[in-house]
Image (tube, rainbow, N blue to C red; front, side, top):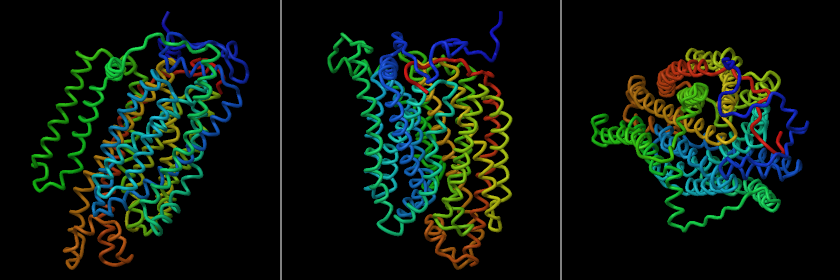
Length: 576
């Protein structure tokens, strides 16, 4: 008898009546799965051992951590153009994020191994430390190159921290409630999105952008470490209760290093990270070379990048004992479709959003704060919508129809409409309307995408599935940033040369490179109008690219199984 398409795929734990195995509060006292990896067993033992009050405290700290992370993300996005402009390289605003985005995505797979093998607290502390180091480096940087290097540490640590929090939500919630719980812990963005603009303005007009990063150097560890302490405390509690088995093997240091290098596929990590970075960076940097695409540096980076990616595939296929990427999961159509959708969402987003903040200031004459408010419309509506779609999934158990018939059309409509409404004479109200369409679509897509990939695996593979989704999102973001930078550097300077009055042509390079110089010309002047027209032409091309890539996203959703998540059990212990 054929298995209905809406049921779970092989490898998942299914219960027709979840209430038979847990009480109304979501508690289950079953012992941890002894066949799972040690990190998974440890978190299952921890959730069995801790009390409901501990779970409540954990989610309170989770909410506070997301609050600070939301402020940090908004402030960093607002300050990025001013950091690059401080070094007279405003056009490289997206470029500084390419390398960090690629590495930040692929390292989450290694982090998944750390969480599964060493444990959740250990991986979480590692990410907090990296993010703090990155923030210190950003505050102290003295060039675009050093800022880009700091972004690598910051992005790897910050993305890893948020990834660890997502895994924690998955560890402590039933699949039916997971979308709703993830949406609820994201609600701090409803507040923080309005704070990013004033905070950025305050630092720019006051002590400077370096002190903004310095402030977060203190805030991030201060709010993140209490959750780590709670996890560690309850881990030892579970250990004292005999819920965690002790390992008898005691390999020496060299054996441990070799073992974990093989377990984490360190060579594969280096190959794929370096390969994608070297392949994508030339699209951003070719304009800085005298010969452009004919430059030896650009050609060598492209060739070496492609060679490293091919080498990675060969290494994974024939030589590695533990694969870097779980191919068995990727071959499932629901998982593969979720990964395609994740990449598409971020490619499209970075195509249209990379220069939107600068556009709103230069073309529409908005202040940093007001431009931030317009951009944060996207955040507010997407968070509210994600809570709604999480509740919808809780009551219906279905995620594919709402994504396919509501989320996707609104996402495409929002980007497409902005092509007509972004321009020197455009009404800011229409831009806000497009942002609302985009945000509602995004809120639906993000929640449904994560539920789709988690519904296709057991708890053992939760961390890996979220890591794979994050990797595709980060690589998609890097591709989007690359497309944005390449289009901008190709179109914007040419249009400036066409539109600028003859008296301003000697200042072409300075106008092109510095946002502050662009804003220095008064609204209505011939020079400002020329800059605005050049902005509009470049932004329309970015929006066209951002609309076109959604074809892949639609295909990704069509690949999903129409799974009903009601009755599927994955977690143990005190969970929501």
